[in-house]
Amino acid sequence: MRILVTNDDGIGAKGIHLLERIALTFTSDVTVVAPAEEQSGKSRSLTITSPLRMRSYDDRHHAVAGTPTDAVIMALGEVMKDGPPDLVLSGINRGSNLAEDVSYSGTVAAAIEAALAGIPAIALSQVYPRRGMGDSVSFDAAEGWCVRVLEKLIGMEWTPRTLINVNFPPISADAVQGIKIVRQGLRDWSKPELEHGTDPRGYSYWWMNHGSAPKTVDADTDLEASAQGYVTVTPLHLNMTHDPSKAALEARFR
Image (cartoon, rainbow, N blue to C red):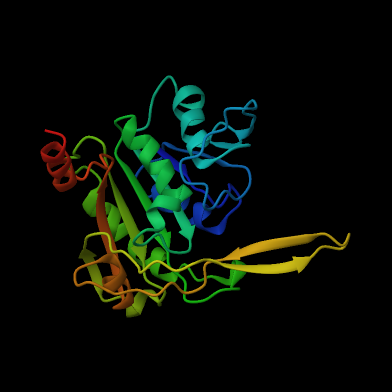
């Protein structure tokens, strides 16, 4: 089995080093192709107005000056073009990718790109409880439970153009309640806060802060299960058509 490991926190991130070590417990054939710098919140953006550049540290580790989607494209089109991966693992992200986070997430975007290419893909994220933690975020739950999750997912029959989104709760591995298969939740919308400041040259800047979005937690969702201390596993698919609305539109345009 060949595994491609990528992320959106950058090739030097704590989470990707952990994920590489975990991947190596399943196979010795692991290749890391990831953004050179943090690309959080870039979703599925592409670099199309400038050339892509890549630094290869050795045969197994490559940093792309671009987005997570760029990294997967470079992996499939250049680094692993003679032997594509059997599985793509994206993460382990520092922070949650629950509910509508998946539409912003570069971690999930990398898995989406793999799924579009017909390769089984899993996005993995470590939830943490508060702002301002920096590199002190604990990956204890991910470290304790990731292998158990992957053991169940690797080798399963994969529906084309689907991916799996996994979130580890913000607690110690010993406190985790188990693994739950849940659907994607949805928080109540909240206007992002803009923190205003002035740089050393006297110019204004604004820093976006999403803060704590209010949420009406539905039963059997990733939001609820994560809050209860479970590792959440959510299957996602790429066809965004809303069939009930399609039927209503067909009736209206008759």
